[in-house]
Length: 248
Picture: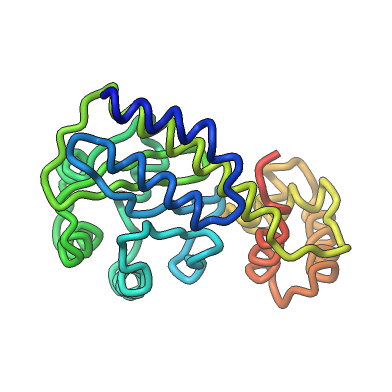
């Protein structure tokens, strides 16, 4: 654990100086290589609170593959399989997980059958035998290995700590480089748009917030006009790019 702990401490001290996503990814990769089994960083994914679909996976914006991963090939195959077979069960599971877990742990817990196994089959296609998922509040970090992993509790904690620090710096870089817009949504407009982003209908949003449906309809029209959006889905996408759907 000594080499891994030293690498994590070094990351904590230096990652704040990284001003490009690639530098953050490389720094986190170096931490994984200090694990006794020399695990690789598979990637970091931003997972917002609203429904996330394959089309929203944007390499370099909310998805950052590890340096030794065929990012283009892997994510092209990922999107194709997600469209054909439905949601990624292990990614959904990571949203509720409270601690790091291995790919093998996830397979045993979920007991997936048939087409639902596609995330595991995809990993196998890219020679990923096992890996460690580090679930964070708005990010999912995955270290991968070509061999079965044995990650002690202390090492899991260290890797989770490194992942959290790296993801935090990455998020700061992403926010700083997002396109800016002089038009800002009001707190009430952001609240309503966030509710719609969660999948609630206009009537459901009104009931949940204790507003009349006419009030929600009026605010929705304002949102679409401010963001020059075609529809509510388009508005959610634009607002996310502007950082206006971030949790407050």
